[in-house]
Length: 97
Image (cartoon, rainbow, N blue to C red):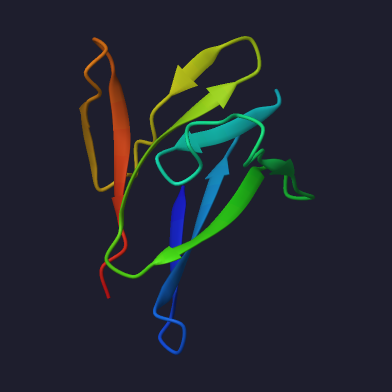
């Protein structure tokens, strides 16, 4: 699940990534250099795992979820899924105002 919250004063959007997953998982993307250590999803009391990032309004974020064990997952609620150039895909979320 993807949530967007605009901050017009800072011209930023907070994008929250949520996933119903029991295993440890990170979101990796062009906003964090595809590094699985930068944005781990934390387990919440509702059973979901989530993490938020702040990006400039108008950004297009390309990302995937990396689940413990090396399994990649796309986000079904993303604005689009596109080929990633490696024979797989990645999700894209738009942060337009």
